[in-house]
Length: 77
Image (cartoon, rainbow, N blue to C red; front, side):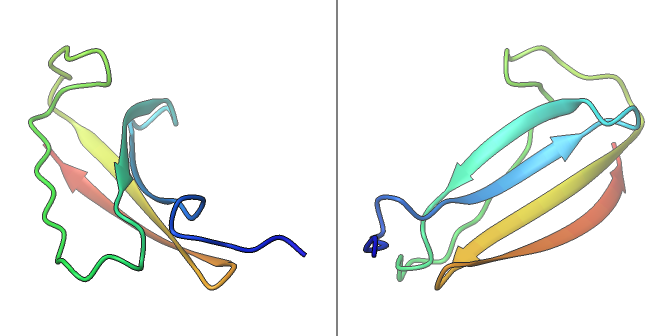
């Protein structure tokens, strides 16, 4: 049985455009972190290019105790 440690748990926040293309991927601290996490997106993609105005979908995946929970919202930029 594999032991899950804070080094192999992944919490991610991914931003997609309306076509479903991944625009930005943030790797967040693990659930073991005691510090609150604040994230700010400057409207750029993973290559640092400004993205056009429009609607973007955000997926927050939290891996806790071997289960992944997903949350989705949409936001107009």
